[in-house]
Length: 442
Image (cartoon, rainbow, N blue to C red; front, top):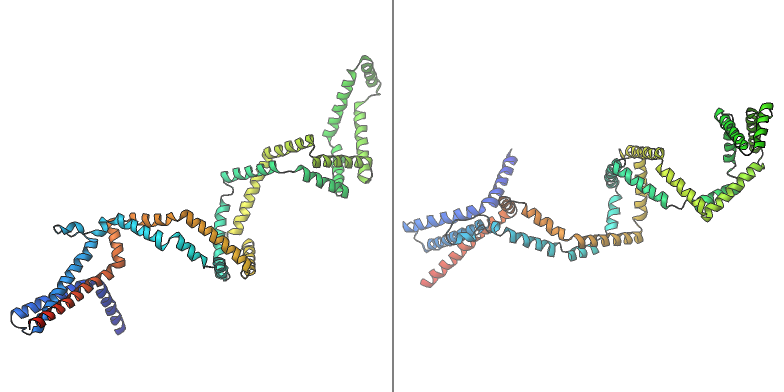
């Protein structure tokens, strides 16, 4: 209990001395003047000492009143004739004071030259890596990066992002030289025989396709069209075809089945025989195509360009692209949604490894420092005027009362001591004058 009272008393004493000391000094000076002058006038105080003390209180009162007026004139308008227009100094001169503060900050305290000079002796890269070597700091930095990446990923499927990604994909596909790498790859595959599984699969699919009813119908219709065209080439041929149909020598159904059987047998032979003429012909065709691709043959290049354009314009492919973007977004959101995911653990491990590796690499640290300082220097030179703008804007957005209150909060206590000094110094000077006068007169 005693300690609480003592603490409260000390807090009150500190507040009283700092915030009211100017008023106290003025009250003491005025009270001392009144009491000593009254005692001397009533012959209660007759010693020369009291006259000297009364003169000191008189001078102290004058000093205290003068400093009270000077301090009050900074913040308030004092309605006195003639001199009243020279009061309320801060409000009247706030524009001039604002520009003076801006100039002081930008040209002296935070000038570009001073900032550059301070940067020269600072090892920025080393300090950053040393800071990140502590696990809690690295976790905090990665969490901030995670939050930023999460916000960026959240807009990936937006209309503007999709349009940009599609445009970028179109640009990459159109500008990419696909023909020559494709030709080299195709030639390598054929020479190494790595294309044979693909040929086997193609032959199997072709054999199965021959068993489809639609295939038989197509071949049947083609044969009918061929015979009809053959009939149109002359009377003899027309009569021969008619006789063949009437006698059963030309049966389109039989021809269709026989043709399908021949194709099926040839495909089966080619599938089981790696040296089959059909396979060799296919290899020759692929090698010829690879040469055209590598040499940039005009018709082949035009075919590649048309193929690329069709792929880019295909609505199903565009839908697949949009779905792929959505899947990537969802996967990234899942990995960035929590600091303990597989992706974030990978980032943590990789970041810790890189920090340990480069934390003692003087060449890397020197290069990084040089880059950081050059970048900061360029930014300072380019945007240094913004420092003054920030100071100016923050000062001008305050109204007169807010500006006065903020200044009072910062320097009001020190101004109270100015008033105290006025009373004390004035009193001492008054006592000195009184003593000198007393010595001279005696």
